Length: 349
Image (tube, rainbow, N blue to C red; front, side, top):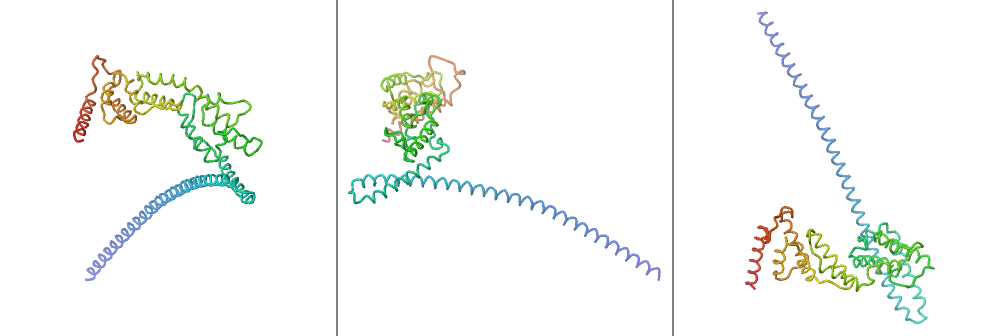
């Protein structure tokens, strides 16, 4: 009996030891998992923090960009407002000059306000760092954009009340403020023309803004009749040859703009007809098609159609030259379709 009790106690002890070991193993496993989770959570937390920092930096950068844009917009608005104020003050000054001597005090106040507004505009002009941000055109001797360049320059000079420096022969170089602003205008002109044109008008001992303006005008507008005659002859005899559609149309448009600068504007219809006349044999089918369109297309539409035709053509080296030039199949289908559409529209009308 005693031996049975002893055996039963040993079994219970063994079972208890086994349960203890299993509990210890389970506890250790749970501790390992908890440790792993803490490590994983810490790593993920660091990643999330890094992402949050990056988003904050991006938001801060956007705020800075927005603030800079707002400041620039505000400065431009302020400059325009000051320019309008200066114009209003000038008009009032001209009106007040007709009054009696009794209003001399009021006139003095108006003159003072006008001078203060103009002085503020001039200080803004002197602070311009890069005039090319305001005048995005560079004029050269071979360009046909003189009219656009002139318009841009006069627009900016008017904004800062500086037009008199290029449009008026009355100079005030004994006035230090006038001389200083004339130098600003000269630097603007020099920075918006090519080196070749600068060499033509530059003078060793310096040049005034008015002299520079007249020198540039002379280069582009003197002998306009003879220049217009020669340019018109070149314009009406230009052929595409081996030029791409883009280069050909750009050259035609440049000549038309140059003729307009010389007082001989070219109408859009004339420009289109001249382009069609000079097309090479690869595009003759387009010339026949475009001249039949109703209403007659604009220069922009014709250039777009010619570009599309060029894209659908094989390179010139891959074409087999024949006496009967036929349009590509794709364009033949397009021609048939558009002809059908025009016929349908005509019937509906």
